[in-house]
Length: 587
Image 1: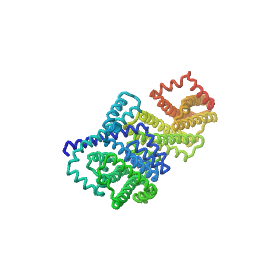
Image 2: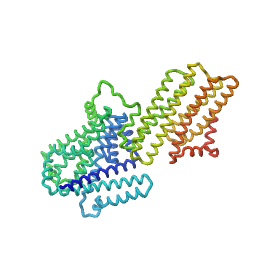
Image 3: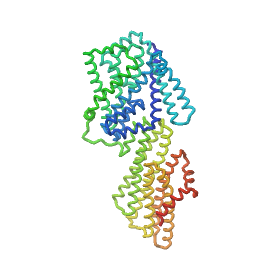
Image 4: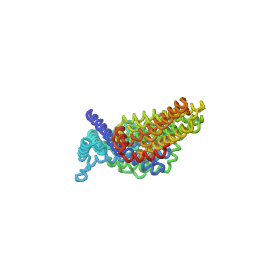
C-alpha cells in the first residue's frame, strides 16, 4: 500500500467520521432531545432501561455518547447505578445498527433490487435531496432530515473510499502475513481494543474492519477476536469522561468496562472451547461486511442476555473498584446545580432540557425567598430572616452557574426552537435573581421596623395586607406558569400586575393623606416607600417572565409592543381578568 493509498484511507476515515457526526446531529435534532431526556425519566425498570439504551444509541449513532450521558446522569444524581447498567447494556446492542448500515456497501449482486440497495447507487440521490432540503426550505425539521441524508451519503462515501484504498492489500503478502498473526485470539482482541480506543468510536473501527473485509483477505478467524476487542476499546471514552466526576459516575464507567470485558472473556472462552471440539469451519472463510454486522449483533445480544441476571453483581464489582472514602465527598455545586453537567453539552438539546429543570429550581428558590420575606410582615423572627438571606444567596449561585451553562449551550449547534428557549431562559434568570434581591430588601425593611419598634397604623396595615396578598398570589401564579407554560396562567399575570400597581398607588396616596392629618410619621413613610417599591418591582419582574413566555410562544421578540396591545382597553379578555382581580383585592 503506497502513500496515496494511505492518504486515501485517512481521507475516507475522516469522511466516515464526519458523515456519522452530521447524521447523528440531524437525528438528535429531529428527536428534539426527547430520546436523551427519556433516559433520565424512564429507566426505573431495568429491562426498559436496556431497550431505552438500545433506542437512544440507534438514534444518535454512538454508544460512546450514550455512555457519556449516562455517566453525566449518575454524576448529577438523576440515575442510579443499577439503572445505568441497564442502559449501558442496551447501548452495546444499539451501536450494532451502524454496522448493518455499513454492510450495504458490501452488496454484490446482478439483481436490480439488490443493486438499488448499494450505497453507491442511492447515496448520491440522498445527498441531492438533502441539499435541496437544506438550501431551499426554511422548515427546521426538513433541514434536519436533509442533514441526516447528507450525513449518511458522506458516511457511505467515506466507507467506499476506505474500501477502494485498501483493495491493493489483497495482493500484498505483508498484509496477508499480518492477518495471519491476528488469528491469535488474544492479539486480535488487543488490536481491536487499541484501534477503537485511539479513534474512540466502535462504529468507526467496525467500519474499518468491514472495509478491510471487502478485500477478501480477512478470515473470520481474524475478524471475530478483533470485533470482541472493539467492544473493550469503546470503554475508553466513558472512562475519560468520568475523570473528575463523582464516585458513582466513575462506577458507571467501570460498569461499562466490566460488562464488555466480562462479556469478551466469557464469549471468547466459550467460543474457542466449542471450536476445539466442533471445529467451526467458517473461521477459515473470508469475512464479509454483512457477516461482520451479523456477528457484531450476535455477540452483543448474547452477552446482554447472559449478563443481565448478574446486573447487581456488576454494580457491586464497580462499587468495590471505586470504594467510599472515610471522608465524604465535598460537592462542587449545591442542589440541582449538579444537573448542569458539562458532559451534556455534547448533546445540546439535552443540555437545554437540563437548564430548564434547573431554571424551575431557581424559580422555586426565588419565590420561596419572597414567601418567607412576606411572612416577616406578619410576624418577624430571626430564623425566617436567615432563611431569606440563605435563599437569596442560593438564587445568586443559580444565576452564575445556570447563566454560564446556558451561554456555553448557546455556542453549540442548537435547533431554532432550542436557541429560542436558551434566550428565554437567560431572560428569565435575570428576573428571578432580581426577585430574590427584592425579597432580601423587603426582609431588611421588616427587620428595621422590628429593631426600631415601628408599626403601621391600622388602616395602613390593612391596606398593606391586601397588597402583600396580591404579590404573594402573583409570585405563586408566575411559578405555576413557568412550570406548566399554561396560557391561562400566563395571561393572568399581567392583569394582576396592573392591579398591584393600582393598589400601591392607593397605598401611597392614603399615606400622604395620613401624613397631612398627623396620624403617620415621616420615618414610617420612608419604610413604606421602600416596601411598596420592592413589591412593585417584584410584580414587574413576574410580568416580564410571563410576557416573555407568551411572546416566545408566538415567535416574537418585542415584549413591550405585545403587552401594550394586550393591555389595550379594547381587549375584552384583559379587561375581564383585571376587573375580576381588582374585585378580589380592592380596599
